[in-house]
Image (tube, rainbow, N blue to C red):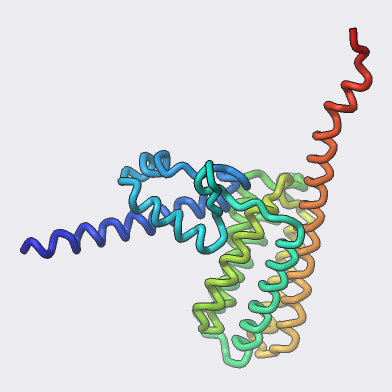
Length: 258
C-alpha cells in the first residue's frame, strides 16, 4: 500500500505540469505574455493552485522547445526573436507543411475529416459575413481570436492527414513562435479574411481531388503571403521603436538649456 501513494502523487504532478504547459502557451499565444516578459513560477502556481515543482517542469519544457529562454538574473522570459528568425521559421514551416500535404493528397480524405475542414472554413466565412453586416473593415478582438483558432485548426488538421505526429509537433511549434514575435498590433481586415477564406477553400479542394502538385503550390503561396505580412509587421514595429527611441534626444536638442 505505501508504494501507491507516490504513483498517485506523480500522476497529479504530471497533470498539473500539462495544465501549466498549456496555460503558459495560451498566455504567450494570446499576447498576454509578450516577448521579453518574465514568466513568474510563483504567480502561475497561485493561478493554478499548485506547488512550484510542476510549474518549473512546464517552464523547462517550453525552454527546450524555444518558446522561453533562461536568463542569468531574471529567470525564464518569453523569447524575443529577430527578422532572420521569422525567415528561418517560415522556411521550416513551408518545408514541413508542403511535404505533409503532398503525402496527405495521395489518399482519399475521410468524410469526417473533410466535414471538419469545411466547418473550419465556414467559421472564417461567418466572420467575413459578420464584418459585412456590421459595415466594419477591421475585426474586434474576440473575432480575431476566432479567426486565429479556425486558421490554426485548419492547418493542424491538414497536417494530421499525413499521419506524421513529429511533423505536426514541429509545425505547431514553428507557428506558435511566429505568432509570439510577430503578434499583430493591428487586427485582421476584411480583405485579409476574404483572402484566407478563398485560399483555404482552394487548398482543401486540391487535397480532396488528390492533386498533390496543386495542393503544394497553393499552400506554398499561402505561406509566402503570411510570411510577407509578418515581415511587414515586424519592420513596421522596428521603425516605430526606432522613432520612439530617437524622439527624446531630438526634443532635448530643441529645448534651450538654462
